[in-house]
Length: 286
Image 1 (tube, helix red, strand yellow):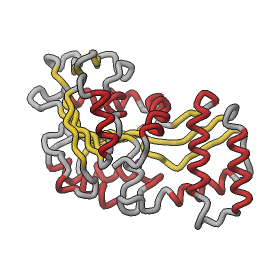
Image 2: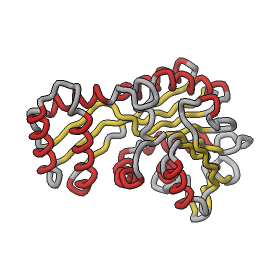
Image 3: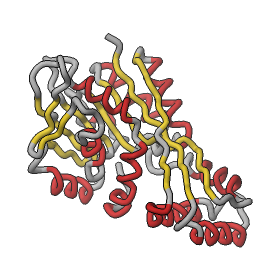
Image 4: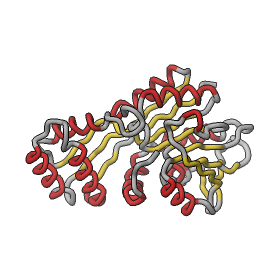
């Protein structure tokens, strides 16, 4: 489901990891080991090159959860013997899946599936203890969320979706066009990206409501990007992307938008940018 390049995914991975709510990530891993009889299988949708895998197997997420050089060991205190995590990576882009296998195929238990998220009935969800995703659900429609949530509820799977864009962006130094550009960008985030009319900034609350309606215990936490001079290259890519997305059909004056873009690029090495996201963890009530 990822429409992004390896280079962009690598560029954003550091800020993604820093932004991800560590408490919800730890609770997601604890859910994996809470049932000694369940296979510890994570199905990662829109997996890209494996960023969720790397995040959840990083020892910084939680000290009781360690990731050795050749395995992912679930060793939560009191949860029984350590067991190997099984990762089922699902993406429509074979290049990204191949990159994930190149990076992790010798050190992790991985099943890779090339699949389209819209083909919900054929997604390899069977047996999943947890279904995860990163930076995906602001791209999908309400219908996709509703159908996926119903399928997960029917098989009692947990759900963990990190880094859903929430519509907030704050820049320093400020520019008079910031608010108008953000309004246009948020409208663009709600257009059809190939998965129906996208939820965009509404994705977090919609996910929360959809799973709560099915009886899940749902938690939502902020996970904003905090970008500064050390992230200059990423910020420049972000500025160019926002300018391109808002340049047509949203009523912005072309010259004014170009001036905003140039101002932002000139300040990328010294300014800051905060982009709001949220993480969702939805677990069946026991």
